[in-house]
Image 1 (cartoon, rainbow, N blue to C red):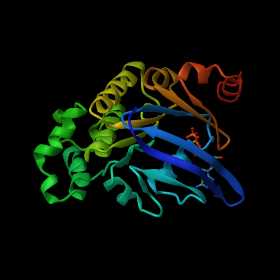
Image 2: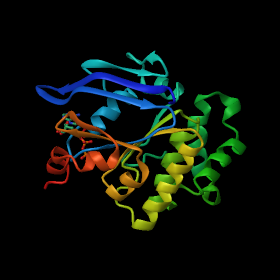
Image 3: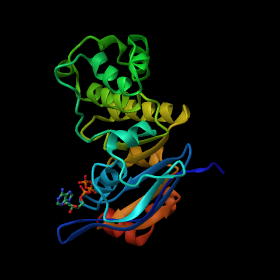
Length: 237
Ligand SMILES: Nc1ncnc2c1ncn2[C@@H]1O[C@H](COP(=O)(O)OP(=O)(O)OP(=O)(O)O)[C@@H](O)[C@H]1O
């Protein structure tokens, strides 16, 4: 079995008196495809924000590649190989598509931010043909592909894809799924947070389920989805 790339132990987060996450334990192995699901407001984005360093968690700890993340800032976590996409793509609106990729590449040093390397990233997401367009000229699915290219430009070990398929058509969902499979085949461990159940079940080797800030299930997808508490909480049956 491959090594554990990410370990969350007892992670908790409160907003004022409201507990958004409590006692979350989670292990992710290198190369794994994990689906993190749960109803609206169950804490998935809060977990992502704590892991990516956008929020400070109140309890618990994250260990990534054997190193405690502690109080590392988001960009420091990104440099260590932890990447995320945002639910709403956030391109630099005043920069061309290729310049949007050169920005994260520049984090790794000026030599890394070459046009050739940026073009390679765009080829991975099949956007090379639009390299010199502005983000506002892209369709929704192209914006999602740009968001994925931006997040994976530095070849992260772990990618958290946060609702990368929301609002897309069936064929567009398939495009993004194909892309995520390719990234995973290239060695990237992926946590998929998604409400599009067809995509989650097709993609995930394992499912973890959050309900009201607690992890209620973690295991083989079909077994997890047929657990009564998951059906009741998540599917509203
Ligand atoms: N900055 C914040 N301040 C106060 N409460 C927050 C904040 N962010 C999230 N919450 C609350 O924490 C809970 C968990 O929200 P979160 O966005 O993590 O859920 P989610 O599972 O990602 O939902 P969705 O599937 O709708 O994206 C919700 O009740 C939400 O209202």
